[in-house]
Length: 321
Image (cartoon, rainbow, N blue to C red; front, side, top):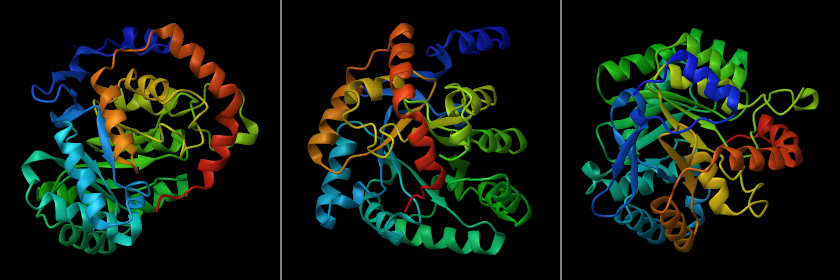
């Protein structure tokens, strides 16, 4: 069921998104993991995705990381997120070791910070080698920052390269990620033909490029970029649910996850450095039910008032590695 424009606008004004029927895809019959549709891609993804960034690399031994991946898939997680920059390629190498025998069981996403045609094409080939695969399911332009960065993507050949890779079907779907400026992300989504988007979404409603001049608590990815992504039926991936651990302990983990899962997103990408965290987050995913609108508003108001400005300042300079 597609949201009507009037109904969509009313949901934003009311401060409650709800979960539209076109997003829901039931549960995995073997694991009970809830599944959602990744927007226009039509792919079904688990609402909890495996983050392959710095927290994955906290599994110091390769065998520990592979065991975490194995357990994640056994728990019903079928979306694995990585990037060329994570551990200088180490995350991709580990994931490649795992997926070479499990390729049909998972969707694999990686990212590049290259902004020109030739550099992006070379980097993509290197990613395929590390991942030991001949295609990726989602390939993102990594960490969009400013309008100048967007112009570099547009004029340097990166977009042309992304479209070429999609046309060749070595990148089944393409996207862009952003945790810095929701207005720039919204601009990129309006202008260009992406399939997916990964954005910072959490209960503290982070996302303002000028945090010292925040006019209120409404300027954030949830209110600025998310509506554009929904209107264009993009596959929406949430990240920074715990604000790079700056929200950890400020509210129960269940509330932080439940808030984001109650937004119209396909999945939440979470880094899980310990097997017990993986088990607990999977348990919370299996038992998920939408957070009532009133509770979402209350939690958001509490956390935004206390932490939004600090999060905005931090993420305006933060770089994923």
